[in-house]
Image 1 (cartoon, rainbow, N blue to C red):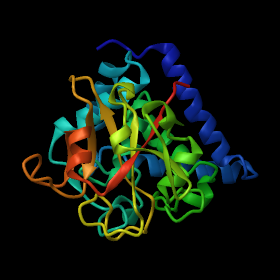
Image 2 (image 1 turned 180 degrees about the vertical axis):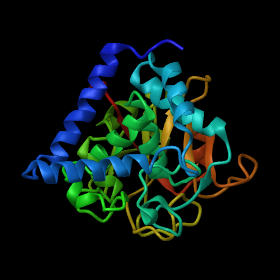
Image 3 (image 1 turned 180 degrees about the horizontal axis):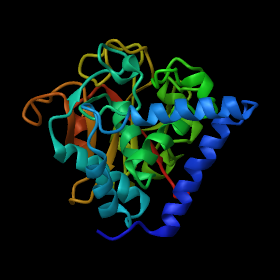
Length: 295
């Protein structure tokens, strides 16, 4: 395997280092800094090479395969990589055994739609499995210090105010890409302060590899027939997935909460043409699209 492109590695590594400096900066004194750095390192170690996480050497090998791809294609490649891996179950993050409940950054054996989006984009924006964990904390808890969001045992606190609970806030933050919704539709509508493209107005040719697709539904409606978890709070944006069109189709790769008869029999990480998905899951009104940019 050839080594990582040094310029790409420096840019992404520098960002991870900058995020870490910001997270320990508010603490005065070398003793406190050392204590927080050890706590951060404990958090990183607890999210590498466990029974819930794909082995670091496998992730690093995939990194080397994808390293020279543009960012959008790296995102699509990672989404497809997990779908092809198979056996990844659906588990709501705030449910029993969920990543939020357990305070984990990484949980590759079971996931929900948000964690899948987190994980895929974090790996695509990093140069190693270890750096992906560091980067994950810096984005999921943007603005929080280690002291605030990491517990002594290395677990993280998703109830920290820095963590964005609602997908609407995640979209507005632009941490997970620029909102390009206006460029992928013939018309726009608005619901709950979110502008979206109605399903019938999507210009599929304008969608790109690695686009993050946020699905808009009626928060007052029932969750039946949608991907909205019945335990989750009402929200306009009810699901999220990754676009992959490298195989000729405009495919959605996502963590499905429910099976679709004749397409996939079990919940979990799966692939389906986006147009077919919107036709089969007809409670969604349309989509919002965000697109990551290189550093």
